[in-house]
Image (tube, rainbow over all chains, first blue to last red):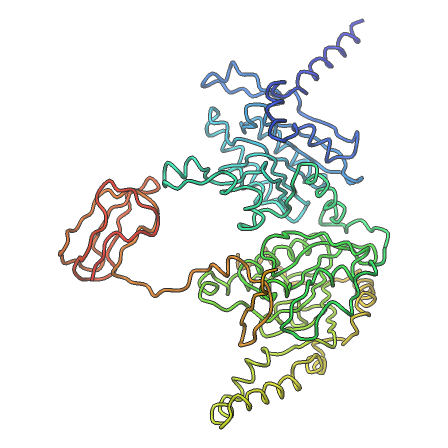
Length: 514
Length: 102
């Protein structure tokens, strides 16, 4: 039968393509602890939901012997499917085919699925595992990268974009992940850099391993380029699924509402924060004490730990938590933590995710290195991001809120919708010690017993100003609340602001202090 | 367990963990305009002055080949060349003092 024969022929052709770079190359891939491109896609997507396109695409490069080279699917797998029921577009570079190198047709497949994602308004997941540009294809390969970067940028803030680095991602190629919302990396597998160790050695004479230069840990701890760290590909895939459960499919809708669950009783909100403002605690425990099911999905856990960001739910609805972490660097805002928080605030705002800010910070970090590193410009990012955000903004001042830090952390003055303060809150222009030393300098220096006078004046200042009531008397704080009321009030505030509308002046776009 | 660290902000000492980057931060040193450093790793192509020469601010002192460019390092001040620490052909990392003028 002709039909049967043709179907058999199709099946054979498919079989061939599904082998990618062949058994030997697959074995090599496995030996590195890596899955193949299609296995990775299957692991992320719901079972049986993957639909592959452009399987038979081939390059037509002719130079440098490329005319004799057959590259199955041109080294990249694209398609659509669902993750936890949410439709997504996905591509995965296939390292077993010419090292996943990016040529013109390879890039056209990627841009095709990117265009699709933007048109259909569904999230895009990109799995990067590539040696870089396909040098034989010359400038066509560069054109391919450029077309990808352009689409990453245009799609930014419209559809969620997730990058998964599961192999090398070097040279210009790293700019695609850098332009997306979230970057996932895996220990010993992910490698990202602009110039690799070889070039650094020959040009600069500096010797460094790939892992130490641009491994997963480096990008999670030092550079801040990556957002999620995993020990294996499997752990990485479950992190991706979890992230997808918190975010909406595009910027016109809200994230899916889950069943509301109470927090775990082991987090006793009355017992987490010490009364003495100089003593540390883990602010994540406060988040867990208010979030549904005590479930907090932290982002950039290892980077700029003095600020904590991540997703949780309140009454089943996704919220973005931003919290100072007194346990690390006293919870100060500095160059890195400002950058980390500002980007997350803008993400939440772009995707209709209300912001819940927990405040306990002594201010901005002093120091020559901070000033010279541009703490003015970077610190301003937080102000900018909170000010322009039009999603519901709920603020809880747990303890210290001093100086510029108070203003920056989603204060009333940046149009927070609800500002709650615990009775332990100290909302003041600066800490009592610093303030007393300035205001009462004369009395202190001219006293016969300066230390005694200083102590008195600090006490006096503390008594008068280190509390939430001065700010509450001006209406900067809407309500001074018991810690145990926090969750109830946040749930209510969210409900009230469900249909919040803010009119902003017409503009093309602002000019944030990048 | 490591002793908890202290961080002084506005004369208040907070008990907290300090980051490695903070603990290992470079302390500020005032600039020394007479010293000419390699601002980028590279290869010294030519040293255009000799010990004892009188130079003016803006004069080319060293040519450093780096990033496919022959970079001209100039003197920030006028004065006498008091030491030369490199010769043509030397590969230098970033931050090496090449020539000192006083």
